[in-house]
Length: 263
Image (cartoon, rainbow, N blue to C red):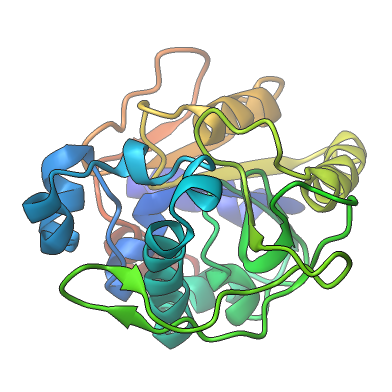
């Protein structure tokens, strides 16, 4: 299967990279797979009995902003300190016309100097007003200090640069009716236009599970005409609709194996 995937890559004129949380695992980032996976990454939340879906709720920014920013502030610090693994550079070295579609909010593709990334769920590195008072979105410059025992923010919280009220990450959360989607929508519109112009497109899907199938659906849609889908996933590699190549491997392992055959 590696050989078939390498053949697809060798003949491609353009590459669409569709990445889920599994893309960051080899960089040391947690993928929050289930409650136990989340609690293994964040033991204090297990002690507090708080699940990921409960914490990723925009209501906390109004009801308990220190709890909300403790969760997102810790993640912001983690993502800023993380170095993207070598697999990112392998993708770039293939050197074709490339675009990225990702559900990740960590900014790792931008850190690895990818120029065209569509972040369907937003970015932790950008802020918006909690209300929101306007549709303004701006880069987060703040550092949020977090107590590691209580996982609550202990420093001043980011403020909206327009009204002076509380700011929040520009991330689509669960049950989120106040997310400002403008930045992500511009990226998605650009990606859709680009994708429609491609004639020999190969889609490389990496680390995207079925629990939140946004990335898998995008990859299947983009590859529907050609069947040129390479799905890299150690736990859920099956391709049930259409044609493609399934690689039951982690991101770095699979990309390294492909690089050896496309050098």
